[in-house]
Length: 501
Image (cartoon, rainbow, N blue to C red; front, top):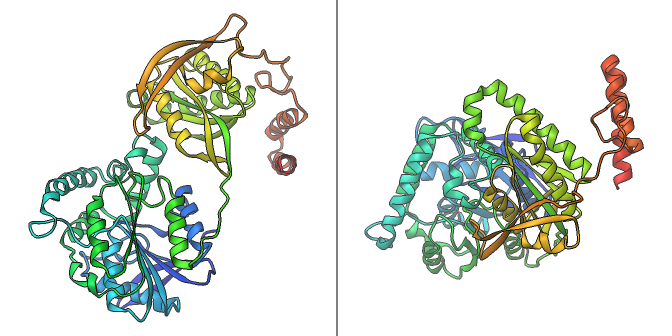
């Protein structure tokens, strides 16, 4: 359940806020560029990030005026107005002593607040932030880099709502279609294009370098080494704040909830609480299957929205069928592809070959696939980690109708009837090193297990178990009695959930 939204008043302007968690410290997160409180709880990456912060704090979230759920603003508010908006939120929630977490554009505001209200600030933490943009009198050698960033922002604003923030803020996720669609939705609902541009113009004019020496609370500066804001700025900023600690983290994401989040969250918790609480992360060796419709963009344009949606529905049904036949689990749809996980690589290859071989006849399209086995972070039903990125990159290298696998997969299925053809060494975007890729094909005896005799009520389904047959019966009954179908479906779901725990 997402937290309740309240509104704090600063004059005639209402600022939306939420409070979650009941930890021993108050922690307010000052948002960056744009934000939207409700959307933070609809995206799995931001939800996990907020839940971790709330595990050791009373977390206070808010939208800046002109963004998200807060009142619109006719123009860009001054820095002191925005600082008083934050002040009003903290008063509304009864927070007299607060730690600040400012990321990106929220950093300068947090620094100004810490210097202005030292009696109310217990600690200051900053991520991916800056005291001002480079200029003739501040790190002038970085001006060309800033000009490139501004040019990228021009493109982002010109195509606002298409998720192009990913290209700048999280380049490692730029090829993730589902992520781009989520970010596009976030852009459209968080701010208007005009406000987004105004916020950028305001950020370029911010300058809090003069207050850095006045900050006297414990301060931690966190910064990823290859993100959009140059690391040199973070080093300079930390050097100007008395006693500030600087921790440089690996990664390219300017957004704190994307990339390797555990080092960032561990550092925050240890700094703010004084003692790091160990958080066990479930990890396991998993075989991942990525599929992708070849030429999806052109195909969608030719078909039109209605026919494209119909094709995707039939595509998803084909993927679900072949994944189930091979004993795997569909993790999620990726818009024009899918991600599935398996206990072993042979099963994943079996499913991949079934999908790419069936697609031309059943769907009239070509599908490519990639399979990789590696250690993954288990995030409920989802998976994370380098192995996931590697699997997606392998799929992107495949030709239409081809199943590419990593050498790790080949080594784990030696002795099976699966054959491999060497496709050479490849550089994979965002993944260090060179990787040997191989094309998987059926051996002489084939790799797919023939399905058992068809079950009468579902002739094209693999209904060999009692639960499969029960699902088929529920589906059949549902056509005549939707109410009975709903009751049976709920009962079956409870039974299956109990069996899986």
